[in-house]
Length: 510
Image (tube, rainbow, N blue to C red; front, side, top):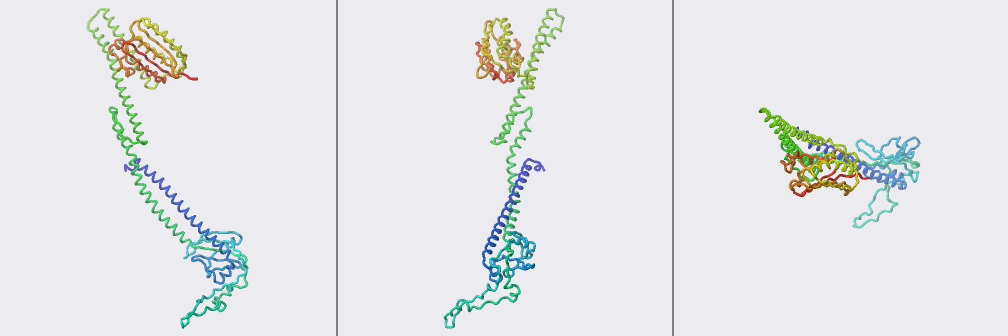
């Protein structure tokens, strides 16, 4: 019962249905074509026979005189009117019966082909056409059948007698009703020629073909059904492996992969599903890491707040001590608020709530406005800010998101550059892209850490970053904003010499 609901059975059933219809149509086509061809050849043969009879001189007199030799199984009959009476002339008086209506149609100029079924004789193909004899006078006595004589007779002495002269050969006497049937003075000016031949050979061939088709079609469908089930089962086996593997994959274990390595559509499907499972595994892994890191980041400030509050509540303290405790609690609360805002921003981006990036922005003017705000922070740390904004380019984007991204990178450059250092901001156009580079002379980033700096909660120096208020989410947010704007970001850094962040954004082309 399970097999009846399987794809293999349904595919095989449709395959057999289509194949069966095609074979039946093909068999009908072969049968009809062969039948038409055989009957066409028979009709051509009947026409040729009629033309031959029309060229036969005094054919009516020859038939009436009994001299005409017809072909085996063939019926030839001439119908004519004598007054209002319909008469006929046929060899050996083998008359093929026809109706008066048909004879009248033929005598009016038509040529007909008909299939006539004669009881106890079978089916005949009949040609009925008009016939005009070359000699309207029918004289059967001119063509009486002569008695055949031997050419020579052996004599008693061993010799041979000479054959008698032709004039001395006796003629066979006519039949008793000869004069009653044929008037020597009768004339036939127009007649209907009827030529009939049996179709038993054609019917036998068609019957054999029908039997062959009746046996061959079911047998072919049976063999095709078995082959179809085998091929469908073999072709759909990878689908079963795919479904079995999919049932074994769970949220807690996404490491399994579909083992289908064929170079067809199912192999491509398996490869696509494996890629999807890999992406899901990475997504679940990032989600777990994100949850773990977020919990770890929030646990620190909460522990500090709890410890400071517990310590202050153990006994009465001086106002300065309470003030110090509240200051620590306020600082940790600010860190938690900052971290929470960044987590909410990442959550909105992950939920596809992307900003509108359709606004046209003059990037040079946009960076000049950012530099006016960054200059104050540089002055506080005695840093030199150099700008080289050479190109006037237009991009499409979201001002708030881009401002947050550039401010975050510039703020990191200020944070990790010692006093007296230099920060450089440059803008130029390369390969139809707006290229913004932000360089500093800060402490730099370790080479082995460069591939991971855009991951969430990743810190090059966790202790130092936490003491300076970092959450490990800034560069991750920057990377996501750049991805939304169809751009890219690269970083080069050397320890003790500084870092360079290069941002490339597509420009608006006219």
